[in-house]
Length: 299
Length: 299
Image 1: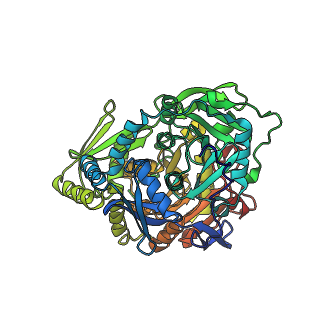
Image 2: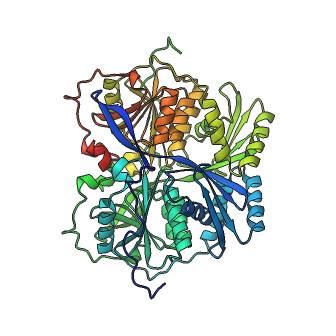
Image 3: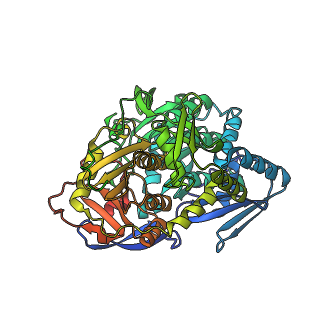
């Protein structure tokens, strides 16, 4: 949709007021005094594709349809041009069923996967890498540092389950300085998959987008971002060596340890436009801090 | 070994000087200036049990033997009384093979698992829960708050890959105020599994032990701790609702958000002995902070 008006900020965002997502639990604190605290829910969700059981995921349980479709896309079990004919979610049974036009091919593929690896994890990862090498990310997709600072500030200050209860990961699909889709989940890969599912089902393309995650920049995270055709990946956490290597290979712009005015870019640096004067950019306020490591602070 | 002398502190601990575990990578910072930073390595390791491929794990690559045995133990593919006859590790092929006395049973079990679920993850999880219900943790295993404060201080200040490069999880097997085995890995479940493997191969029992993790207190983390027969689980991170529920069910002492003098206990509170005067206990120094959330700070 290149000619459409810019999408509004936070089309989707966490709903900390949703009583299904957190629970109040009684306990004691360091002085032995009774305390009551909010903790996030974590539920099994079993995914079927056309009658075949694929996986059971642990999730907070919002947006099971997006999670299901995004998981299948990011595992290459569903192609971008596949027609999703139905998504049936049964809250009581904790089951979601995705139905597609083409049926037989996927089932054959799944059988093969299961037989060769003993666990879908291993083989699926091999498949991901195969596709990875073919993807070309757009060169002309700038990231202005002023956008980056605006994004992290907006993401850190909007109400979220993280601010309410902690122990949760967040991912945000962004365009320029605007966070568009903010998903949270107990598993960070679920948060990514929910965004991939949303993009597929709503027809929201990867053009001019960047991707923000609270999680670490591991190989899996880099592979998923490249598969989603998003050229910029930003995290407040750190890097792994293979994540950096894959990002360089795919020419993905990889920005880590993004906190306040600070960040480090270890791949695809050419997309960064330094338009913000960091002498006047603010440090991250203490209340917005999520993670900090001595290594990061020392740099 | 109830009559043996207490085990010394840090029998195993991270080796940030090991050149195989981190890599120096060049990039740029927020001012566009060149920087060089340390990032942790992340390698695939494929695990075989008696000739059958089980799973491919992403790991930093230290202690592949402990990781392999611990993974199999925590997935109930290896029983506590199974004799491990050989562990062959091929660094070049990135393969580890565990051989046991009894062969056929495991292979039958694995076949069944693969067939019923399409991904070992799902079914294995079911098996874990089955065993979980039978385990009785010892009631008389106190945790003094003075031990807790001493433990977290020692763990946060000893040199580690975390302090060197960030983006890594740590787990520590402890006894009273002494950290015994400190493992780190890119995957927090790998760190747990490496400790389980070490305990099994070295004959280190769970008696009088507590378990510290930098990761969140999710259901999987609680299940693994209970399976290891360790009655106390401590984390600097937060809780999930199902993690708390399972901890209550197993009577596991569950302590979260343990930073400086602060903590919250949401299960098994009866084991905690409040012998430290928190008025004089120190807050966590800024340089030792790993994670903080606004929710946690607000409590």
